[in-house]
Length: 593
View 1 (cartoon, one colour):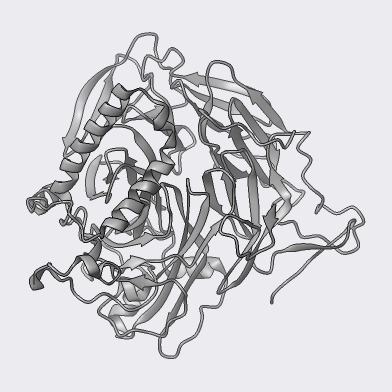
View 2 (cartoon, rainbow, N blue to C red):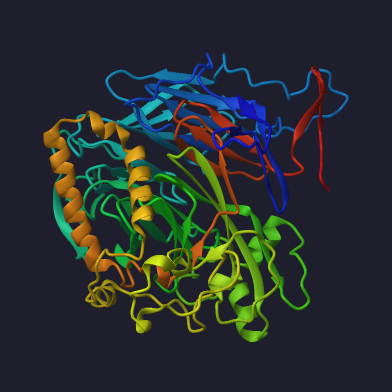
């Protein structure tokens, strides 16, 4: 049974949690799933994914939700946190009617793996939804008109591997990008066909760990471009808020950030262990957070091209990371005062998704204030993560990490920053004195790092390659007990391997040894600092919220949305947005203000 809030048992499923801004509560009337509400047997199926779009209809509730469960794809009106007038006898607060989806599709021979709406073309009468599939195809559908417009890679001549991520190119009504488990990334145009023969490619650009090819054809055809990125699957990619840069998280453990139009590598980061599974940008594009098989969340500075912190809270692989653009604050430390005003006003202050010249020479208002006024600026950026351990973690990034050389301002959060050397001091007694890291910031979390005064400090692949010349070993300062616990957690999240044949296990162990050797070359460099060399964050909130692994985390204006592999999509109301009941037929909106 679910526990109401707190609970002494670690395995209890939480229905609420508390942060400094108040209490987040699970809204049972906004739970979405398959119509029968029966938990989905998720073994062997692709992760449940969720996409949102707003169609701006006249009813005031233009939000639409799409999600996949197994072979099925559903499209509903999304209730979310509905404001209800006390005079209504039959308010919208009643549970969503799952028996009447706007559109439902069941596929044979393949499963939907990911999807994305085009917000530019969405209306109350029509939406453009891209759906990627396990067999490699991509479908363009309109779930309002219940039409299927086009099927791309229908004959699997372009790529036969599973589609891992599909996104519309920001600002475009016709271009979209598709990633595959083959490690390739393809640029499509909805107006072009895919041809009846396999495409022929011509090298356009090549760099460290990637190559870009154009499609050779007498007439326009898809794909327009093919990127090959890293080794192994390309698990997720994400466009920067201004649409000019592309961050790619790959199974080889590398985060690679490209200038999208020029197809040039901007910077690289290596995971502490294993593959990277997810990636997201801060609202102003100054930071990237990645998560993966090392059970960590890693914060990377876009301007400095380096890891600035790691977060440890999950007990298994991190499947999704996302920034919360609504829980962001900025204030002058003297006098201290919380930011007041609308989200739009604040986003204008820090050039949220603003001028497309951000990455070239301009600074944010925040950076200018910090450099010209000479006063430290107090900043907090919230991001969240969910993982295969069924836990939701929330993290705060504060100025004490981003501006470590400025005087510390008053602490406003509960996220802890701890030194890895302190937590593992029992294993560090033999470390030489000159290997001790510089003192770490004493505060709580991470927000936005201001770039250098002269503009963006772009570190190209050549500079990074020289920084990798320093080799290190994987003999970290962990005690035997800590290593055993870590192995146990990782084995727990890969429990299905135990059913494989001994030959398969031998292949896996051989691959693990190879990966370990490769990791040894980057550990202790700019690509992958040692644990004791950078701040280690603890989560502000870490709660078990599901029975099966979590696959979705999306922050909306008045709520956050999570989903698990059983096929349940849950809505968590933000503080002050909770719909409560005084009797079974009467709902009211409570407020903390």
